[in-house]
Image (cartoon, rainbow, N blue to C red):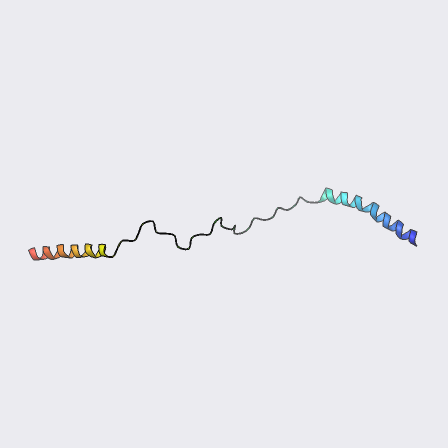
Length: 79
């Protein structure tokens, strides 16, 4: 029985290289990994970007409004 097992095992060993060669011939090319649906950002976006220029002070618009009002008042007074 030992001889039978050894012969059977040897036959499997002899057959495996042939099967492997056949598989190698018919194996499809390796499938490329699909691209990620959303690529990671190169750098995290800033939470609050710094302002390009400082915001105008509140005094400037109020002064403009006052000037416009004074001009209107002067025009109404003259009329």
